[in-house]
Image 1: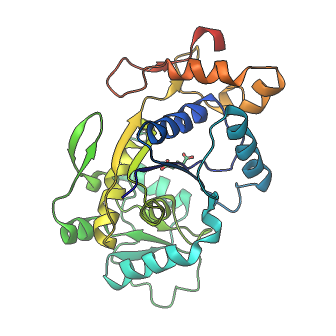
Image 2: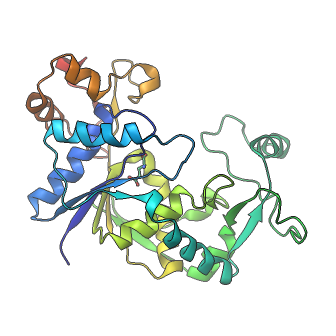
Length: 290
Ligand code: GLU
């Protein structure tokens, strides 16, 4: 099978240097191995995704010279595939409908004594075992019954190119959402289906998604899909040592372009950052870009 990597941005804003590093990592890995570099637009979030941001992503990547193979794939055009995957998990008895609002979940978590400042509090399972007959006309999400799913799949592992073999431990993530109230799929389900459908052999993405890989490995097993190899690169941090983000003032690639930045020099600087997990605390922005 031909080696293939992907860059999978969500078009909810303009790309910044953190995205550029991620795209570059996936691009260079593919090119170094004679493989394919694919672009997937993760636009399932109908309220936050914008067509102008899709156009912006294309423009920014072209400006950087990171050219992908084939046509970009849009997740919004693939909803029946995610539905089929969800139906299979439903048929296997591994899902349940969830009627909770965000406020319900926050209250439950507070009452259960789970530390409220936990970065990603786990869903407390309120709707698991609920008799939902007569309520299915109400807005609801679908959740994975994680304990049942882990039981069904048995022990699983995946390989991280930097960290080596990792035992999958998705239980810690709780009953994750597979289909949202406002979208017929979730990030976890769509990404798992698409990485397989696009023949992705190496998933190269930021270390903020390391925990998600445990879930994706489980979904692969439940759906009979192959498991790629993974690399989770360091996230780019700004002068304050915090992860780059648009809301904390990271310049967008569009702003850098408009300010006259040289894309070739920028790429060279990004290439000089040691991006692997375990090598230093963060991938610091090169001085020239501060
Ligand atoms: N769409 C996700 C994001 O922009 C990335 C998905 C992935 O690389 O798995 O954060």
